Length: 347
Ligand code: PEP
Ligand code: MN
Image (cartoon, rainbow, N blue to C red):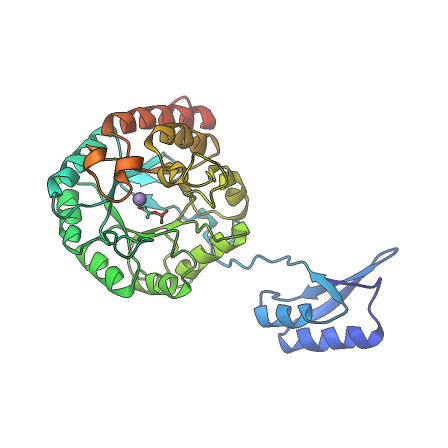
C-alpha cells in the first residue's frame, strides 16, 4: 500500500509508480477516500527492489506492506502447522527443557558427564554444552574440538540429544558428522547471514534443529524472524527462537531480560520460542524467577545453564550455572505453571 505525501498523486506520479510496479508484474489500484487517496499494490509486493524504488520517490510518504516478508516463518504461512520434535518433546505440546554447562572443560570431562546425568535426572530433555565458544577477549578460552567427543559420549551415556554452538563452516561440518542434534546460533552470530545460510544449506536434508539466539543488536522483531527465515529458506524450518536478554539497561542483570517478547513473536510467527534465562540475567540466583516469567509469557521451553559444581566450571558457569537441584526445582515449578497457563491441570 503506497501512501503519498500529498492527498493524491498527480497523473504523472501515478504513471511513474504504475510503470515501476509493472516491471515486477504488479498493478496499482487507487483507493479513493473523502480526503486522501492511497494506492494498493496488486500482486506479490514482497520484491525488495520494487519496494526500495518506490520508497526512493520523493512524493511517497511510506509503503505499508500487507504481505509478510516471511514466506515460511510467518504465522499465516503454509508451514504454520509444522511441529518440531526434539528430545522426544513436540514443541507446543510439552515444555522443552535444554540444560547443561556453558562450556565443556576438555581437561575435566567428568564434570560434563556428571552434569549430563544430573540434568537428565532433573528432567531435562536435551543436553547443552559449548564446544567452541565466542569470547569477547581473544585470550580467553575459545573452546576445544576435543570437547565434541565429550559431548557425544555424554549423549551416548544419557541417551539425551545434544545442542552446541557453531560459528563457522568447519564447526557445522564437524558437529553434523558427529551427530549433534541441535545447532546453536549464538547472540553474536544471529546477524551473520553467511553463517545462517551455511547452516540452512547444511541441514536441508536432515532433521537437525537450530536454536537461534536473539542478537543484542537486533531491533524490530522482524529482524529476529528474518534470521530464522534465512535458515528455513534452504528447506529445513526446524528453527527455535531463543530470547536471551538484550542490551543491558539495569544494574544487576548481565543483560536486559527479554522473555516478554514471547507473545509478540507468537503473533507474527509459528516458530517455537525457547527462552534462555541464564544469559538474560547472568547470575544463578536470578535464573529461577526469569525462567518462570518466561513460561508465564508463553515460552515453549527453557534453555538453562547448569553444572554439578558451578565454581569448577569454565566460561559462564561459575557465575551463571544453577546446580542440578535448583534446575530440578525450576523444572517442577515451570511444568506446574505451564499446566496452569494452558488450563489443563497437567504438564
Ligand atoms: C552460550 O549459550 O553459552 C552463549 C554464549 O550464548 P549467547 O550467544 O546467548 O551469549
Ligand atoms: Mn554461556
